[in-house]
Image (tube, rainbow, N blue to C red; front, side):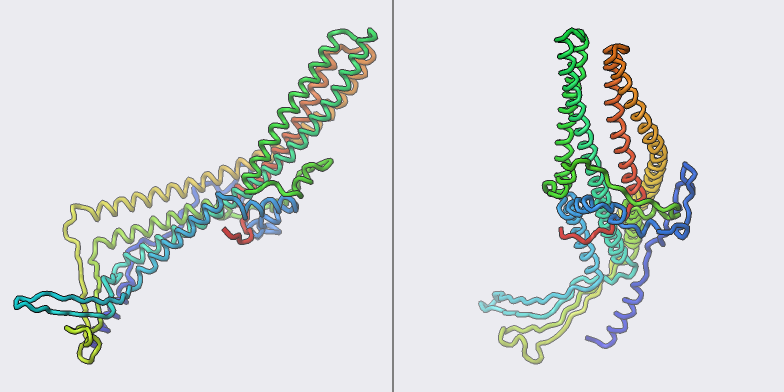
Amino acid sequence: MNKMIWPSLVGVTLLSACSLMPNYQRPALPVPDQWPDGLAANSEKDSNKPFSDMGWEQFFSEKTLQDLITLALNNNRDLRVVALDIEQARAQLGIRSADLGPTVNAQAAGSRVPTSNGGTSSSYTAGLIVTAYELDFFGRVASLKEQALAQYLATTEAKQTAQLSLISTVAQSWLGLLADEAMLAEARQTLASREESLRLVALKLHHGAASELDLRLAQTLTEAARVTLAQQTQKRALDENAMVLLLGQPLPPAARAVLSGPNPSAPRFAEFPAGLPSDLLTRRPDVRAAEQSLIASNASIGAARAAFFPRISLTAGAGSASSELAGLFKDGSWGFTFAPQLVLPIFDMGRNQANLDATEAAQKIALAQYERAIQSAFREVADALATRSTLAQQLQAQTALLTAETERSRLTRLRYDNGAASALDWLDAQRSLFSAKQALIQTRLAYQQNQVLFFKAVGGATTAPMTKM
């Protein structure tokens, strides 16, 4: 190759560092600086333990729940689909990265063409060839590579979002199963108690100490309890089916042992730090994914702008040519070709301008989607905070209500046995007590699930062990 060509190539390659991609700056958060309940967004240093350092294993510290979450992370099919999407995006990134370098191919060809005098003309070539390698003078290929990189990072954040959602769903489903067991135990106990009461009323009726109305009321209470037990049994089965789908396999023996234990209790969760970090919302994986999509659209503008400028490509080859196959690699048969090409757009019916307009509109859409993701995240956190305080009050009041209803039921039964209260009074007290017990279980479940929702709303911590997909 001519010695004068190398300085030219080096100079053009250095100039190819030019980029028309706009400088990216993270948009300001379109949300207030303070949560609606007055909890200021303090800096992380105000907390003894920053929330960003709290992994899900620390928040969900109960062993059985940790094992269930790990099983779901290893076996859930929806998470596997997201992981495969990442592999696809990684491959696309590899394609764009490969575009930055030349492609060198080995090529061999031969031909025999008849001549006018009845003979044949032979030609054989072999060598290496670089075909249409684009010198990225205005950063078009680099912009496309940055776009592919941002899209790949967005898919990795999507996996984090799916993983966080799966962790939260498994925790909520487990809490639901524990509540189902509590409701079933209460329904069985209530049915047994009412069947015993029905037996006693029937005995009293046989000896003339009770009326037919008393018997029918006792039957009403008994059958109502039987209906409730059937409903709770159905709900328990459906909730377990949902949990099996999340886990990708049946419930493990350890979890079944907890559910079938005498008093299955819900796990306790770690306490949140007193102050929330000021950049809390930007740590949510869905917000980070939206920002990566914004960065990708920003990079596509650079590629669209570069389309207005000349595109320089090189085609070069080096090898041997001969009219005889035996002389293909002999001395004197070697040579090279060098064919640079410059394409300057002049008239394209506005195609390049329309493409630039489309990419700029897409960038504005991505910006709006990013801001909406921030605002949605802010609302979820604010809702979780507001619900948490009210549920704590409801749980306290519901506990007091159950205490009152228990005492009322006891006193009403004493009055009824001594003829001072009617069967209707006794029926009403029994119904109210059963409703209070169910309401307390449901309120406790809502309070515990709200803790999980808050963990998810603030972005959680998805530092799960790497799993094979």
